[in-house]
Image: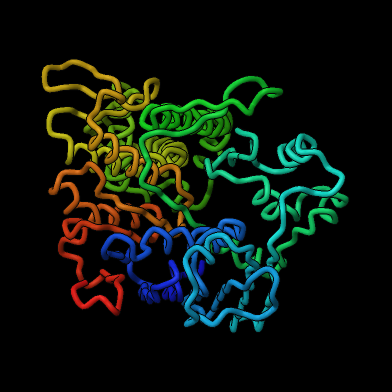
Length: 472
């Protein structure tokens, strides 16, 4: 997995040149600075570049940018006026309105020393309209061949990530999987080498608006209607689905092991060899230690109502007979496989509960396999997730998103995590990211105005400023 180690951008917002080092072994880097220096735009530029969403890249006012990686790979992107063929000088002075509104082509250069690859491609500005294809037919093709669902006249939503695409973006980004006749008229194609590179760099942009999410509604023939729902409620329902999926996998694994259990017991007991299958080399202490570890896992699963701890019976206090050791060791092997089906989700749930309960002062956060999120007040009353304060909802949905809704080992770009959070919660935020990174493998670029977010991590903070502003 490639690791981003440096970003440089020239002419951001027509004014700023920024350089951000991101050591490969660091879990995060923090960007801070005055309003208007381009923190959010830098996050967007990074996200849309790695996602190969060049229609969105064109909308960002900048001249050129370069991204460097730990294996020596370099990805450069530059803007050039659509009517011209010359690259922009990164030091050229352009008016902001020219950067934002002029039709623009994007030139991409990828160099990969490890493989000897070097590819340069011109991503021309194009209109979404395709000759001879109606808007409705275009939308139908996009929905039929891509993961996108139409939610508006010129708007599509990715079924899994929730990212939105304009029609032009959809044609450009998914041109390689549209029907051949469609691709020829669209003229949309990203080089194979660039797509291969992008598959190693997953990104997720978490924007400031986090408490509401858009959903598609209606029948398949009328999916352009949309509704807005509280993110905390949708996350609660999402957790129920994930727990249900984990239980289904566990049930299938358990059925397979239970069917073959008698045969494996007989085979182990009749084996002439000793060792892992049974016999004198498996001691009582080994069995009791392993049983205790598994009991602890069952206890954790019972806390989230996945297993019933009442069936966790103790082993006899007397010394075990050889045949008992054979049976119990086989049983423990099976239990290991069964419990392993829950381990990925269990580690995440445990960390979610630890982080949230360390913040919430007057409400206890619990997990229920049928309800998802469960909140109990000091007086013992259960309240709905939407009854939480905005700060509590921000804390919960951001943590949940990182643990459950972001692909492992992704680069996550977080804009203003301090929104609605108490000072003490802000101070703990980056320490939480370190813990989350250990479970998920995620790395983070965080943009903030708050010194409380940076807290004790100033050695990992990069100031974005204006070199001409002596009072910055």
